[in-house]
Image (cartoon, rainbow over all chains, first blue to last red; front, top):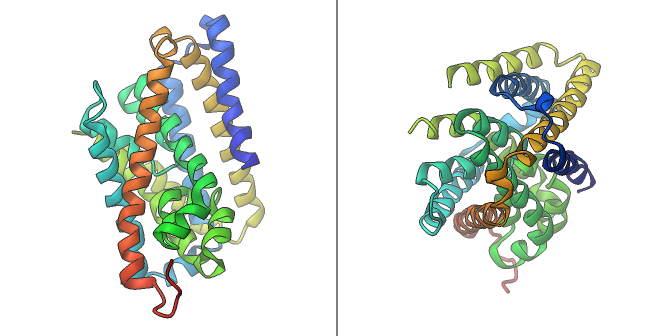
Length: 200
Length: 95
């Protein structure tokens, strides 16, 4: 949780400075976003490919375990899709793209900013940060009332790292590999889903 | 889309090749964190200077929260059935 706040504080400090100064020097050109995006995608790839747990994760795949990330994907899209009808000025596909961040706020916000602009990028950032924070706070309750998979579902892509400790606490140690597997799969799928959905 | 995916795949292949060089992977993880922080800082600066966003910050916040809750509810809902029919130990005490 500490780490998330540290990372988010960079954004908050940036916003506060931006409100008061708006220095032309720092105008965030589209080009800069693109460089950040490519660098981030490349680094995430290296981290995923170099992950020592990857072998174990791949071994744990079977129909039963694969159903978890599949249900998280469809459930998330179903949920944000339905909620999008309550929100004026937000397209159905934009809501789906934001949901496809699965809590992975850094990558989804930078991708969506690059493809659809800053306004939607901010919503992607905040919405996916909130998904992580709600998971950190609500996991024990979710596990109790909606089953042991609920905290993993709520965590989305974050269930492999930032929300893993609270998931283990809420669901039990026997769910570690499943949580890491599910988060891993969703993490890799974020760039595919976001860029694919925003084509429509 | 192809460019986006190819950067990711290129990274994954390089990561697989460098798997044994743990120090390099660690450097990559550190670099990832700093890239994210730096991006978020610049993104924040840009957002702070964007009056359309700042003046509507409450709306932006509510929309974000609604989508977060929607995503969580939907995925928790479906995962409940996966749990109930595939994972739940029959002997487990029910609440």
